[in-house]
Structure formats: C-alpha cells, structure tokens
Amino acid sequence: MTITHVQFLTLPVADHARARDFYVGKLGFAALVDRRTPEGGRFVMVAPKGAQTGVVLTDQQVTGIEPGPRHFQLQTTDLDADVAALRAAGVEIADPDERPWGRATSFKDLDGHTLGLLEPSDFGNVPN
Image 1: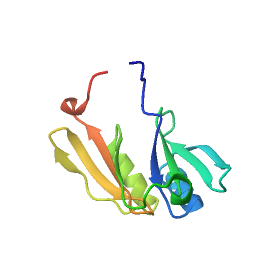
Image 2: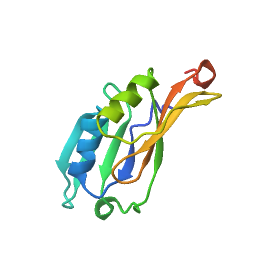
Image 3: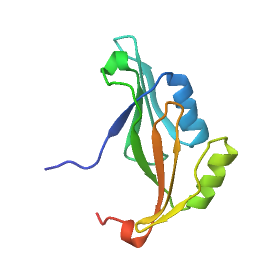
C-alpha cells in the first residue's frame, strides 16, 4: 500500500457561503478551493492551516450524500486557548473534560455537525 494520508472528508451543508465563513472566520481554517462544478454546484474545501486533510463542504444535489449530522475530531496543542478563542468568536462550546487520552470538548457547526477538539495526552498520541 502506498496511501499517505486522508485527502479530505465531506460534510453536507445547507449554505456553502455560511459554512465557509464559519470554518474560515471562526475556526481559522484556510480556504483551499471554492469553485463551481459542471453540475451547477460548488466545490468548497477548507482545512486547518498546514494540514494535509481538508474538509469539503458540499450539497446533496451534487454528491448524493444524505444530509444529517456528522462527527469528526480536531487536535490542538492548547485546548484552553482554543476554547477561549472560539467563545470570543461566538461559538457555543462545552467546557473541556479530562479523558484517559487527553482533554477534550466539542461544539457544533452551523449544519449541526459535531466537531471534537482534543489536546491529547501522551497516551492519546499515536506514533507514525
């Protein structure tokens, strides 16, 4: 096998512009791609700055992906600072909990997708 990483994951959204603004404006992600598709939809990809894996914000008409909440996990090196920054940006986020694998919390985006945020302990780090 020569697989190197996950390229992107896809999240169905109701409004590309609102979703893009949330991920870029509130989470600080980079906008990687935003263009029209031949089918008349949009292909919008965002990602944490410097990340190899992106998040494609898509609509059901183009992909056929059923709407509904999804979950994915983000990793951070400073959970408290990120929680404070998200709250300052108007994001409703739970207080962090201690877990065996690190400190974690979660919040929802505008389409109801749950984003976990983890500051891993040594136990939570998986070696390459």
